[in-house]
Image 1 (cartoon, rainbow, N blue to C red):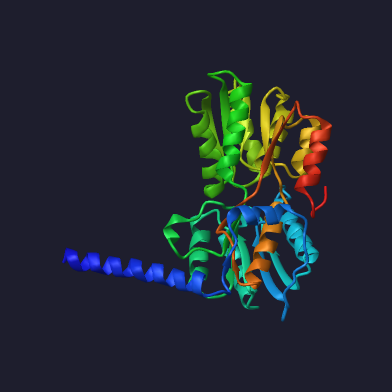
Image 2 (cartoon, rainbow, N blue to C red):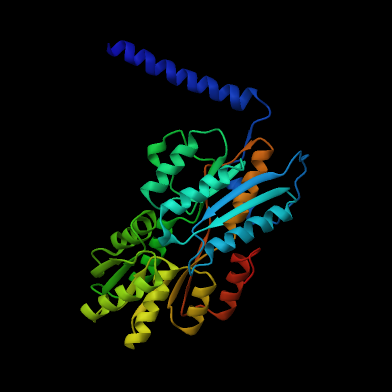
Length: 353
């Protein structure tokens, strides 16, 4: 019995290796672009495509774009900006929702865009329900799925992965902010943690930060905010009322950070430090006013550019890396206005300041 199982496994491995050789080595039409070359393509200036375009590329987008963060809106502008710059003919179908509106609306939006038979579908995953939706899509040949705002492949999908994961590494960003707070505040400093809603963002941004400062800073309490600035304010008020000794609040998203700022203003507790997460326009303005002490700033437009270039390469029958993760920079109260202006021009190449 064991011998048969071993032979079966050996046969499957041999078949996989042979198939890969036939696909990549013997088939001259399949070319792979490695991660370093793809990153260089994204950060370089745009170059018009050189291949013949027989029809428009149909791209559908379903985003939770109605929120204080302008990340999703800018993603559209950077995507279309790069598509225009490389002169790729396309048709775009965009649907927005609010994060708190639930998955049901997103399901209806996905069904609506699928009825138009797009070549590519761009969406995000923050909950198990959204993950299940993508799993159903992956069982189909079309459209090719692009998962945005997630750079860690879903392990349960094994080889049935989407065309591309694109965004900014939540865990890496959390670790950079953890380094900042550990350098700024001494051991034993009390702090509070405001999470988004239950899901990937809170896990990878919030729990990663908590683990990184564990044993060095003293977490007093953590609260979910239901993806709402208003709820973030209410939870921050409760946090500060119960633990007035906290020195900083770690916020997982823009809406959470701005809600916490609202609470500090109401209580007159501007001595408490709050971070921004993302570095969009609302956060930059709050940083310039002194409401936010530190910003984790994404080089925002890299994700839209990466999607555009990946689609262009795919139309040329070239394989792209499974994951693209964009760059971060940390801005703090010692950063000069010149540094801020430089980062703004770098982050918002297509989406504007």
